[in-house]
Amino acid sequence: LETLLDPSWSHVCARGRVWSRGDRLAAAGSTDQASGDHTMEVIEARELASDTILVIWRERSRGDSILRSSVWVRSRGSWRQTFHQGT
Image (tube, rainbow, N blue to C red; front, top):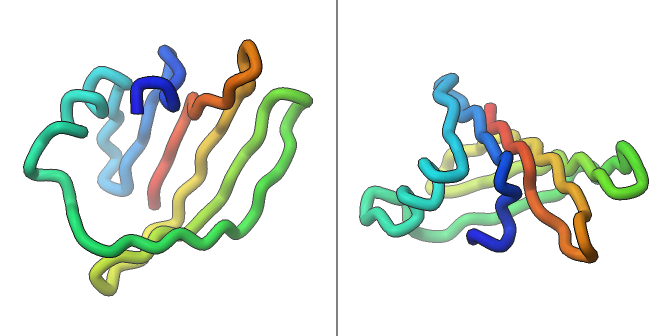
């Protein structure tokens, strides 16, 4: 997970809470994290610049559906997520 999240990463969750990269990495090891089957449906991938992509996708789990958007940047040959939002 550390290699996928840009150092400037932030996340705005559906409840309006803003998470930092450190918050997310700390929560990744928590037993409070949701488990079970999750599916992902990519709705759109849009190039914003030569090294920046916006991905809009839907996550489904346990009967819930969350629309998500993520901004990915390519730096030194690797793609990293720099921003994420769920609604």
